[in-house]
Image (spheres, rainbow, N blue to C red):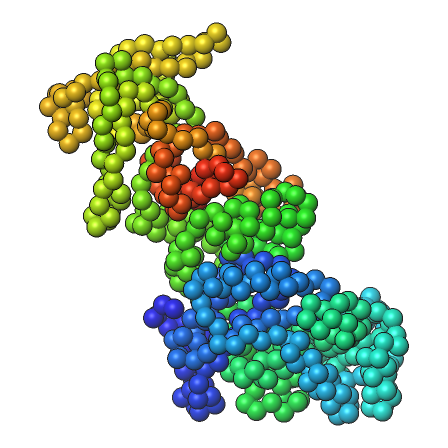
Length: 539
């Protein structure tokens, strides 16, 4: 975590100085109802980073109180994502570990006269809750005795009533200016098989009730949550104070990470997967951590991005271009250079015979990375866009009678364009100048354009994938979510690549093309775009 102090650290320093706590314990609390996205990376940065700064501990806490949406698949995915980012949890804890204790605390609240069984439906509770300017209306069942409530609650647990027929509500204040304190539901009947406890329970605690109890039971000192839980803090405190927790954990809220052009909701991400808009949770276009990993975005760049964004109290939105700039900066410094051609056009050097080695710097920003060689020959592939029969003004690539340098090799002159029956150029015939060899050029020929290439004899076939953002716009309020999806966000090319990419999986800067992840899939070489070379972010 960055050394610069943020407001969370100021609160913790205050608690340590006052002796309210002697050590720091946090927790990262995902619900296993989907894959984590980039917003969760910030929560990890805050929770794991805060514990690390104070020499404390951070648990991985699974909030598994809603079995109808939770799966072991998501638990496994969350573990993988945390490990990918390089964080280490002290203990793996589940809300379901504490179900018996959470239930016992509910009975205690009933016995204290602080909770009651209510027969109103969810809609009726909503209608009687009141508004921001008007108090709510008390439930007609609010006056039940503790004995009756205890009997009914135990019958709920025993499965006597149907889903939604009854619920347990905290008895607080229906006139409270905070709607969350207007007798909130703390248990509901829900017949769903739990991924860990099976069918043992047919009633489950609500998150707002279970959250403070689970924090206390696992020894959390500071419960760090995103800002939408700020209005829920009074209920968090009420549960802890009413049940006599000492020391009671302190909840502190921070602004969540919002990034333009990204779908930042597990509910909508799940919809994209289920409707087949994307190939899965790990589709490279997805903002899930699995998607970022599949795209080839380095974990270090994600953590650096979270550190640069920082921890703030006010909600804000970060431009997607800023995230891409951080990724680009990292890859520019670390990624080896290689060559691939998206739309191949054959180039034949008519006066060249044999082959030789062309030498490249692995990464010109890292002298320690050294050099490597690529076979240069008579027949090459170049980009179709690097030759024009009718070039525009200031065109510095190949044209008939014009000169260009082949990267780390020679200057060539285009002499002839061979076309097919449709008039499409299928081959460019060139002359090379032996004295123009890169690094030892004595030709005196001026060539402004430098072209990358792939040897046609040794090059390999590749499937090259490029991506646009899933959302067509940064922020287009008022439109239906589905109307904003860019359904043309994946572009496939039949490319040619140097054999080095087929032999060495990893992240590369493809010269003049972008940053790509190279890997094999179904026996084919796949080049999957990580981020473009062009930086559109206004720094």
